[in-house]
Every structure is written in structure tokens, then in C-alpha cells.
Length: 376
Image: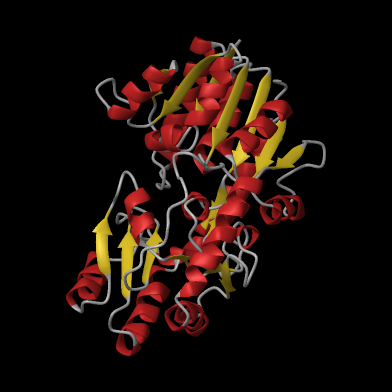
């Protein structure tokens, strides 16, 4: 049997789905992987080939709203499906789910799956512009049309599943399953002892407004005045998303000596190992943020928002704190608790590791998905 997995970014096939691809190959399937940027000379192409998968480059603009480009994506995927003739197709993230599922149906694939890894800024409750409301309406309609052709839809939190039912995106007959995020490799992200030096916070994310980057910087400004030895690290790259922060903002934070910017890291383990507390004050519609799972696995307490996909990862007061989204004061208060009582970080970090082992082991998550797709 053949299995085609479609992604919006090539690196995610290795970093987020590498274990799933390996499991599918172990089940005896021939696995094909499609994403933009999978050129034969790329590092991801080589890694997928080493796993035993067959990479395919497709045209796909992850954040653009160009109908001509999207039609091209759909046509290329239909041609790819007809050429490969897969028995199973799985798409994840918005455009691969929409156009991948439609292409699989048009190409005659008998088993079609969609993985909703979060709903992004288009489904934020507070629509801040007419454009955002228009985009949300278009995406909702496209999801509704595509998912009627899916045989099963996977969600990473129950809030997204509920919202899709309320919006009529799920038609009531398509089965859906909630899984515990993408999972995390507990051995790769092994637990580490907490640093004995000053309390250090770290935020790892794409540098989007909706990830709470500005709230994190604002809290850092407040706390740096009271606790000059505290360090506030930021890891991630500026993004093509229209909601990205600006280069000028980032430069000012660095110039003021408030934010230590570590850039985009291909391996975040060293940053997590040197940190005392992981912070993600997002109000983005996350699935379950992979960065939180990595922090949990490495034994770091987490401060995040009481929002879909994030609230599942923290038992407030046990392995971190949940704060309201867009609330600089609440975020500042939560961070200050670790500055006032540094030993909290180690105790809560131990509980974080327990949560990771119990709920988010990538092998457990993949076992559920494989079973739901009909594999043992």
C-alpha cells in the first residue's frame, strides 16, 4: 500500500511527522511526502530519503491568498495523486488539508484523512479587521467543502473539534478524533537539571503578534526594572505571515537590553536546557504547541495562556501557570512568582516531565493515529 502525506512546510515532515513516517514504513507502507521547497538538493529531501520516504516538491504558498496560486496547488496535487495512486492521503495545516483532501477525492484515493494542527489567526475570536473576517469566512467555507470528502478528521484539542461542529464544517457523518498534539520524543528532549544561575525565561515561537511576543516583551520591560539579573530570551524567526512583528520592534528590544534574541534555532534543546521557565503567551488558535511539549519533556515549567491547545498542557499551579490572553499584567505576575521563589521552577519542572511522559509521548500519539487509520 502507498501513503501520501502533504505538508505546508518541508521541515515539519521531519521535525513533526518523522516518527509517524517511520512507523508507517515499519507497517510495510510505501510513504510519499509532499511539500513546497522539497528540492532534490535540500536537507529535508535527504532526511526523508534516509527515512525511506519518497519526497515530492509541490507549489504551495503557506500564507498567501492568491486564487491563481491556490488553483495551481490543487492541480499539482491532483496530478501527484493520480501519478502515485496512493491508498491513503493525510494532509495537515490549512492548505494541505483543504487542497490535499480535495485532490485526493478528485484523484480517486480511497482513504482520506485530515489533521487539524490548530486554526491560526483566521479563527481568533476577536476579528480585528475586515480582511480577517473575510479570510475567516473563506477558509471556513473551503474547510467545509474539503472535509465532506474526508473519511476521518484528527484534531489536537477538543475546542477546535467543537468549533468545527458548531460552524457546520464537520457535517455530522465524518468521524473525528482528538489526539494529544504531535507528541514529543522523550529521549531526544530528555529531562535536564535546572540551571543554578539567574532565573531565565525563554519563548520559542514564530515571531507573530498572536503568539504573544509583544506581551512577553512588555512583561520583560516591567520585570527587568525590579529584577535586573533576570534574563528574557527569545527564539524564532520573523515570518511572512501578515501578523508578524517588525524588525524595528525586535531591534529596539535588543537595543534596550531587555530581550536576548537567539535567532532561529534548528535545535532548541540548548536554549531550553539553559532556561528556568518556558513562556508562550499566545492567543493564536494552536493545536497543541510543539514547543510547549518540548519544554515539558525537558522538565521546564510552562507559563501559557488559557486558550485552546495550550490549557491542556498545564495544570495551573502544578507544572506552571495559565494566564489570560493579551494580559500583560497577568503574565508579569506569573513570571514574577518564579523570580520571587526560584525553587518553584525545579519542582514544577519535575511535574512537567511527568505530564509529558503520561500524555505526550510521540509513540502513544502515533499509535492512536495508526489505529484510527486502520493500521495495527
